Amino acid sequence: MEPRRNQLQASHTNLASLLDAVNPSLQVAYGKDPARAFGNDAPELVLLDATYGENAGVLWLMPQLFAIGEYAGVREKMDEQQTMELARVISTKFGHLTVTELLYFFFNLKAGKYGKFFGVVDPMVITEALGKFLDERDKYLTKVQQDAARAERESYYNRPDVLKPHEVEALRARLEKKWAEEEEKAKQENNNQ
Image: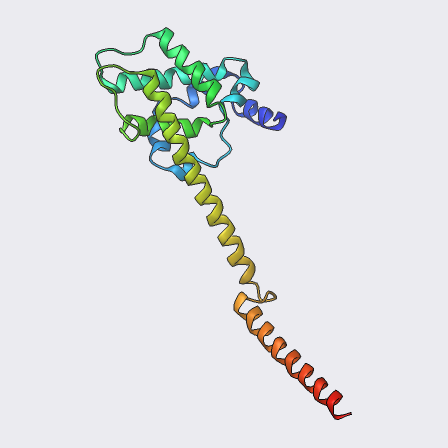
């Protein structure tokens, strides 16, 4: 984790710099492109805490959560205490998520992908939505890994020095036929003696 902390501090010397750079205005950019949001080297909430102090992840989440309330236009928004408590829950339970994954989540929460609010921004709706998001994220990352493995296999089999699976089968069939013929010939020679 130390090299990642150093890398993060090199790009953002303090938490204020990170909060300024990775703010709710980026939700659109990351929310519309899962390839950009997932599987990158963006810091996880736990890395924010390890780099900038115990509540850094919570402090990063606060403006993201306030933006939800502003966007939803509901009559009752979460107050600062509710927002902080929700940020603590998210940081604790979902601290393994990166800031770009969370930007994707918040954008798609605003788009109604994970449900909607009825008159009030409900913290439990948000944490429940994060569960749905995790399922989506896992499926996406699994597909990316499968595609990469498939591409690696195809790349391997496209090398000129590597036999293709159908060539291996054809070779096996020829060898088995040859071995059967040699075995039959040996049996006939034993019978003739």
